[in-house]
Amino acid sequence: MPDSSMDAQTHNSHDNANHDADEASPLLPSFLRGHVHHEGESGRSGFHPRHFLSVSWTSSNIVSQYVNILWPFAPVAIILRYAAPGQNHWIFALSYLGMIPSANLLGFAGQEFAKKMPKVAGIIIETTFGSIVEIILFMVLIVQHKNQDPNDVGEGEGNGDEGNLIPIIQAAILGSILTNLLLCLGLCFWVGGIRRTTQKFHPIISETGSGILLVAAFGLLIPSAFYSALKGETVTETSGGLRILHEKFTQAALYKDILKISQITSIVLIIAFLCYLWYKASSTHSTFDEVIEMDEHRDADRQADAARMRYTGVETFVALGISLIFATWLLIVLVEQIDDIVEAGVPDQFLGLILLPLVEKSAEHLTAIDEAWDGVINVALYHCLGPSVQTALFNGPLVVLVGWALGKPMDLNFEIFMIVLLVLSIMVVGNFLRDGESNWLEGALLVVSLQCFFSESLR
Image 1 (cartoon, helix red, strand yellow):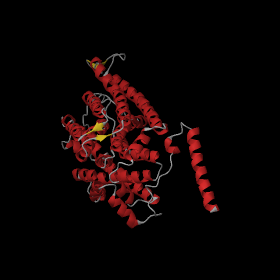
Image 2 (tube, one colour):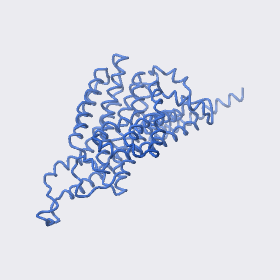
Image 3 (cartoon, rainbow, N blue to C red):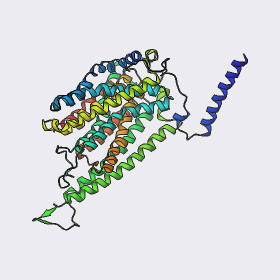
Image 4 (tube, rainbow, N blue to C red):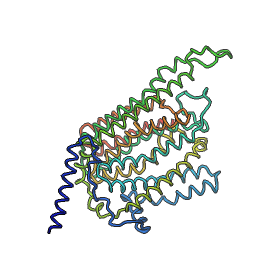
């Protein structure tokens, strides 16, 4: 009895200490004040190959389990890349299919790692892992990009020149945001609406997500608007075979201005993202806390998820390592084939707007749709809006700064039609989120809205 009494006193003292620490440090991030929960405990330790393969195959839901059938395409694509380097179309197709299970494993391993952390930290970590594939894709594209003749750039159009991957990166940034907002969110509303008449979500999710997205969209709009307003004022580099006076406003001068504006805008957007992330993590009534409070008892598969086998800590890091290696390797192989795919007649806009965003966000989409089906609509909504915010405020600006460091002229001068489409899409989504509930009709309308998205990419 004395021992148990001492344990109880010790437990209470720890609770009181944690409570006092929370009260004493209201600005301390909530994920540092949280308590580690045990939903991710496996009951094992170390690495067990049979259990590891079993957990990996089971994955997070039945759709993700079927995606694992595509795993053989990953090593076949890599082998074909070195054994038959001339088979560009086959290598591209196999790499694309192999990327799907790689991204799925990375997303699932991120979920498993998040469940071993305090709940608030877990959601932040899970969302971050969902964007790693996109960051790797952008980094591979900017590293593989070959600078063009300065007299040929700055026109603001994807020209498909050999080695010029900047139009594809720009299209991938917008495509990633739009597929999350229109396709993924639309499918979440539609799938959730099939099982339930309406699904209600907390307004803090919609107001914060759509508001910050609108601000990000206007930030991305600045370089494009500047270019559209001044491109008619430029003059040609030469006149009658003689160079014009240096004070004339040429296309090259306009392009340099666009590049500087893009770099400054990128720094501002990244600072805004860090402030946004810190506010959510440090606020006592943060978005994460609201989501957890409303949704943790709604999950229709909560008992099944609790009984599911889990990775150990070691197995989690092994899964993360394997998925990161395969994802990076396959993305390098995939990007190497882009010039040949474009020459074969596939528009570079279609690659950037549709194909690449779908494969690099496949795990995030599957997770969000599964959560909407289970009734966890707040978390599903965050998995649609959160990655869009991160792409607009961090991933896209980050590739501009990396290009700046590498001496590659990556800018945010998007086609004006596409950036206007982005702003309109954010406004449409914000209007659907305003009433705090969703149904299958709203989801269907969002998916149908993709028709202009596809028509522009195939233009």
